[in-house]
Image (cartoon, rainbow, N blue to C red; front, side, top):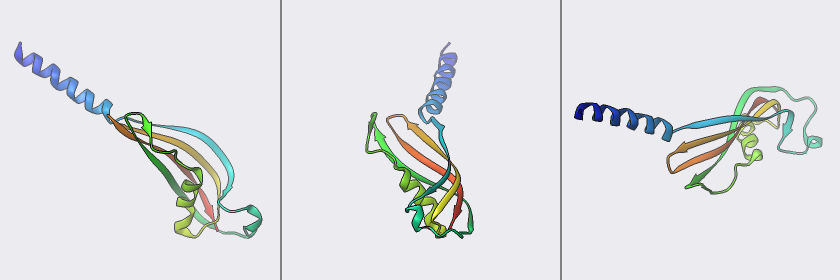
Length: 115
């Protein structure tokens, strides 16, 4: 009897760990063109710098957020490493992690960078 109780507690413990470190991702937009600068300032003859991704994240604790992720930060994180100015054909997703009492809320952008 005692052995069965320990087995049930073990299963519940593993289940608690799995559920306590859960995450989800939701696609929130598909955009054709995004730029961190006014498009009038961007040259018309730009070349592809490849597909890139960028993220902007904010922490939360006990359900209280410490700010909101910013779309412009996510775009800048994607274009800055390759010297790009424009992203095309990008998707925007909202990612949420849950680690029992705290977690993160992030915006992730993925698309082709031009510059």
